[in-house]
Length: 203
Image (cartoon, rainbow, N blue to C red; front, side, top):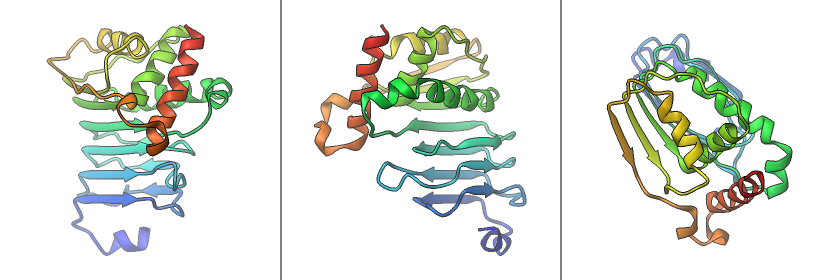
């Protein structure tokens, strides 16, 4: 990837789809890169596990296993994130600490972003963090978009998210729910079902 990017000194937008062999995405030398999109799903879960992109302003990340660490996104002003898992309820029981640590580390790297969009699974994991009594970092977000149906299993996380966003000026909620698509047709729906089931047990 470094050799490819070295031939694109004025590259401003980069989108990666299911790049399973790419483990560390170092974009520190791509000085003009402003937009980065990384899509990973449960069918092709491999992909970048570390992202070093100090110059980008916009990030879209659909995360799957293994988790992706945002090493350096210092210039980030806008991000769109969601987490994609298609695993059993037992996974969420055994990996609650892992999920908690993952989203908190992401939030820490997003503290200075002014516009954030979180998907439904991300919101549910935030609720898991909240009901376990773990504190959230403060955010400077001014515009927040939530792609999730508002119901009891996302409310704790959203409530804390709003409390920790004192500069918020605009809130958009796009009512979506995993239950609108049959579980056996959509892997994200499958993940949503098991995460909700686990949160029910925690409640």
